[in-house]
Image (cartoon, rainbow, N blue to C red; front, side, top):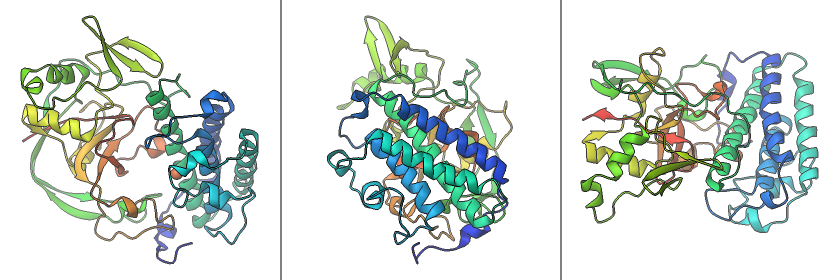
Amino acid sequence: MSESSSNDYLLYAPHPPASTLALWLEESNRITRQILSNISIADQVVPQINILNPPLWELGHLTWFHEFWVHRDGQESKPSSMQNADYLFNSSEMAHQDRWSTPMPSLDNLLEYNHSVIESTQELLRAPIDNKAAYFIQLAILHQDMHNEAFAYMWQTMGRSIPFTPFTEESKLETNTQTWIHFPKSTIQAGSEQGSGFIFDNQKWAYSIDLPAFDIASSPVTNGDYLSFLESPSNLAQSTPVAPPSHWKKDGAIWLERIFNQWLPLNCAAAVRHISYLDAQRFCEHHQVRLPNEHELGLLMSQKQGAWQSSNLWEWTSSTFAPFPGFSSDPYIDYSQPWFDGSHQVLKGGSSFTPDRLRRVAFRNFYQGQRSDHFCGFRTCLL
Ligand SMILES: [Fe+2]
């Protein structure tokens, strides 16, 4: 375990009972195994581009991560049950491009490694557990949930069939009901307090912010809104007009949208998805509006359902991912710290491939602003 990390994680109480963690783990690992068990030899191969990972590497990595934190105390001196696992599967050490050229264990071996590691944790969870064990087990489950969602958006990128059943239905927006919701000037609490249960280090710690009054859209930007923008004379007159998203195509006069391996007529009333932060900003400039910051969007999302419409997507914010006052790295020091580099934007919300346990208003997701491959959308605020 790194000496530069803090022991704050011991304060992330209360934790769910062991029986709940056992169910979460069973669900998350069942999804991973369902994706990998059904994968053909051909589908084990993916193009070598920076938004993809080889599926077998990803299976090895998420199992290694679980074993490393839950069963090895985060120490390489405690052996893994898989030969060479630290070399092969530590994402902090195995360079991205090397994940294609380094020989991997077979799928059967990786599934066996996964089975033995997860069964050891299920054994632990048959009795009450302390805060430390609960922290690392939650960390490993939520990490696996994020990788499961990453499998889903990788499959979307490659036009493969849907890899697992979504947790929630796609959101059905009520049409023509978009309004501006006014929030008066207020003082809010950002970040998370001790005693909030499991948090990630980038949520430390709660602090007060004076938030000026703002007006935010009750609904996300729709495909129809985005199409009007793309086809507007002012966009087309730009030296580099914003191009249609890569999962759209025009067939005669009809726009189609690819959802996994199916081309469907573009639903103009649905929330627009797979738009980069950079293109969302171009949309905002065109309409003379702006993206909400992470505190504004968090405040909206903490209002009761019905007052606003969810996109069921991760929504971009104007907030560059940065530490809150009081930040210190938790034992997995590469979760946040390396990404406070000015090139990542905070997103809030969650997609239909995000389980409820990760859909927390205080949770801060983050991606580089040029990316659009994950399940992302946006809404706007008045200037
Ligand atoms: Fe990971």
